[in-house]
Image (cartoon, rainbow, N blue to C red; front, side, top):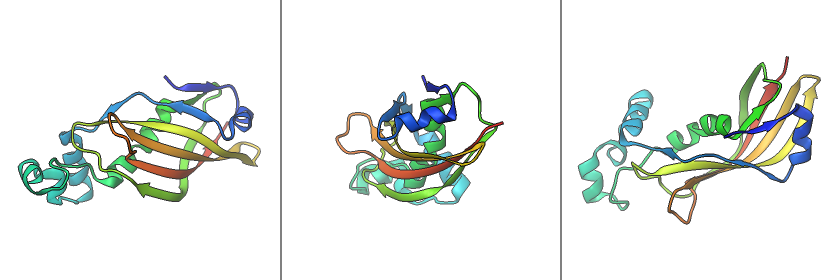
Amino acid sequence: MPKTLHSPSTLKDLISQEISVTDWFNISQDRIQQFADATLDHQWIHIDVERARRESPFHAPIAHGFLTLSLLSHVMHEAIAFEQNPRMAVNYGLNKVRFISPVKAGKRVRGRFVLAEAKLRKPKELQSRTNVTVEIEGEDKPALVADWIGLIYFA
């Protein structure tokens, strides 16, 4: 369940704090295949289940790193909600991304969010910088860590 924020200004009170941890989300082989088809990245370590079991050092197919990264938008929607709904939110960029551990097909991941910065750029435009960790259920190391910048526009 997302953490509900009452107004954009309440974000400033949460700087350096963990905002939310999302529910677990399954990374199925079917989702990996769909991502491969959408991005035209059909490398065998992602889509050839039998070969990945035999030849991969991970002994299973793994999700594309960019698939895991692309799920940040989804897990962010599960992490935070505003009482005053934004008009829109957009990605502004990433300062740093590191793919720490592969996500094997069938594993579940979740997002952990720590707000690093929040500032009004214009009266109704908020820029946020969030440190995101995507954890893998049952694993010691995360799938990825990212320093993510977003813009949120309010009516």
